[in-house]
Length: 363
Image (cartoon, rainbow, N blue to C red; front, top):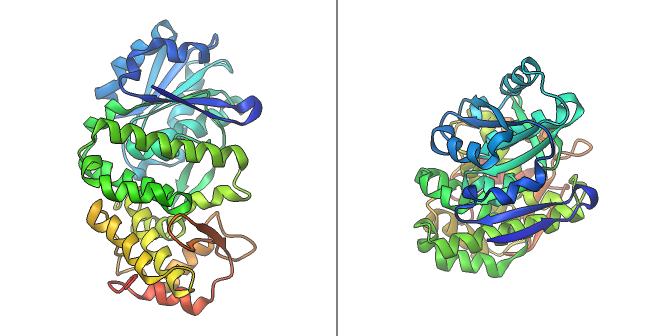
């Protein structure tokens, strides 16, 4: 087991990474306090791991809330389902919510914890690769609105994160690949050596080689913990973690939540960001092509944006994105593999060229 720390002063917390952690009661005991535990999961994960997690918390576990699976259910109705349960059960401020699931469950449960009685404790137990390497760390919680992804939420840190890599073996292959988009992101923004390692080890990673997966999750969490410790509320460097997300969120909103997995739209968005970076003269053509090739060939991820989203629709959605600032769309772009930058002054004609170009992206 590896233990990393997210250093946020009084809000600091550990990330535990390893196999079979759901059988180790000693890890979570220091974070329980005296309150009752409510486990929030979904209809896919609960049949697999709810019994294990109830046993993990022992006598402290008092009830569960089972949500519907899928990005299309990441909304205020799901949060209300948790509120209804907590209020009807007379749960007080000592209650601890445990998020057992992927990124959607973690975001919903975390937002409910952030807002119920103005804030109660919660613990993250991420069961998807995407959640283990990214969304469970850093305290971003929230839900989607029909007009924009993650537009309603709060920064709210968990008490701890328990990333049991053994659970990844039950994930559908599509979910594994989608999570790998966020993994590749870490190599692109600040770790060229990691990007090269991912390229070389892609076959073993897709087969869930235990050594590779453990190293990969640890590197991603270590990178995110360092960035979050510097910039908890995304006023500076933390925005770099949004590489591919400005394009990707627009695709998710335009196509309807659930058509694409989040990681799939991030992969498409990173290919588009690489293309725009090349057009601006930030990124050379060979690196832009390599990024697309690693995503598409090594990890079997989509890189082609949907053909039915108009340029005007893209720009409208990206202008409404929560990362936009003073009316300008902010993009995370690349000045090389391992060197991401924040850019808010993009010539509109170059952006349109990226948005209008489909199969020629990065060529």
